Length: 417
Image (cartoon, rainbow, N blue to C red; front, side):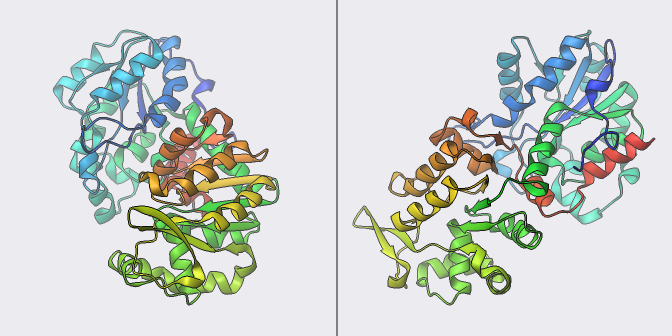
């Protein structure tokens, strides 16, 4: 397991009473475009045990977090609602200050009493914390020490704790630089996430079934070859855009609208990889047998053999749903990333609702991950019946692909000092 002690230290190993602790969490939540309010607070909710432990211990807690990005501008909002939600869950105040690391933020940290917490402003207000900065410069963590964030906050802290697994694939100053100069440890959620994903990747109860759908097909293609090649996945059930691209790779013509959608988003670039996967692992990859379209305002299901059609292909059909339900019911491990259809439209929620319910009712070890999947799970299931609901998307995919992530590397380096 990637995070087995002593490679990374746990915050449970230390007494932070009276200490100023800089806590990096990932409470980046989906935002309702119409209201500007949070649609799902799963990441906030799951960070509560770490907050509670540190505040009960008497730490002076300075919290840094991000929301949205330059690549997700609609979600780039202040963190006031996040602080309010944390306060409700903890039953005590979490102050909020809309300043990331300037003089006001520094004064607020100095004024903290034991057991108090302040959530500072959105990290993505800083140029050095947006994705473009990281991707353009590609600096190692030690080169980040002169960044404004690190220079401003590190001198005020006695220790650094990272509980942001959902951002573990990011090499930003807030994620990998403080470990260079502060005693560092992992929060409870970080350990929980890696433990669950390690179980899926390294020792899954077989047969292990991966249900891959949604619109962000880079997630699916980031892990399929790895989990099929190393034998951790017994089968892949494709749906969503991944299923459509796989059908194209098999030589099925979808129709002008669906093919234009795929081409406009450069998803057709995944066709050669799909063909390789089908050639090497075709007996383990299930493709949709039927799909749902809209006709005269009604849902209509059509077999794949009836393609191509000009309508948009918005969901899987009954034949596919029933076959996938059987696979899920007989699985020992189920990993789900991406809803099977456009579930936001009631006409096309059937595949998502039925398969998420099947995962909930499965006796298998079940893991759901990815922002849209978590939102759908909250709508259609009792998430307490899911073995693990992962807060991560990109980090989850990178972990399952077998790559060592920047956060893991930084935390191991800190533990070795």
